[in-house]
Image (tube, rainbow, N blue to C red):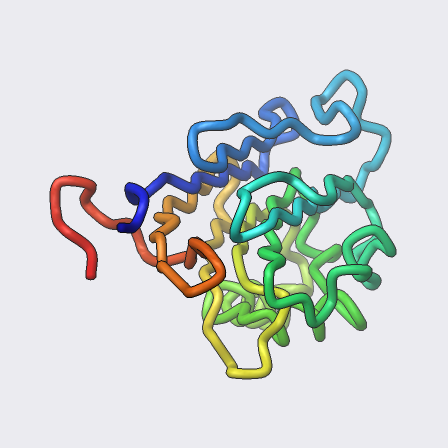
Length: 192
């Protein structure tokens, strides 16, 4: 019989005074590099990447990067891994520092959707004379041959934080339980 449905929570803020946060199945995950306004050396913001195993729910990689064009090598190592789930939380990035190049392509491959498109559209529409930060949260599987959609959310208004709340739903397979990332499920409701 399947285990219980577990929470997956991701928090991002466009405000450099507020650190991003993650909680995977009740376990708080902290950035590999301290992220706050005192220790933060990147004026254009950063992305916090975490990869976890969808069977054990253990963190496999945890990287902070100010590079908005490439996937960190520690994260790229899990590309096309059916057991790997990517979680991304932005930290106070400027609108002129949105995901581009290989990072943008990877997020799309792993299922980034409307929220990434909305950030891109806002930058295209308001880049001239518009200054600000955004927050962005993304969760998706790193083996996306089936085109499984990921989950993403964004905020472009200053001081408007973003939180992505999802569920880890157990799926019993012959070789053990695998947790799927799903929209938030009410724990009182049975999941089939």
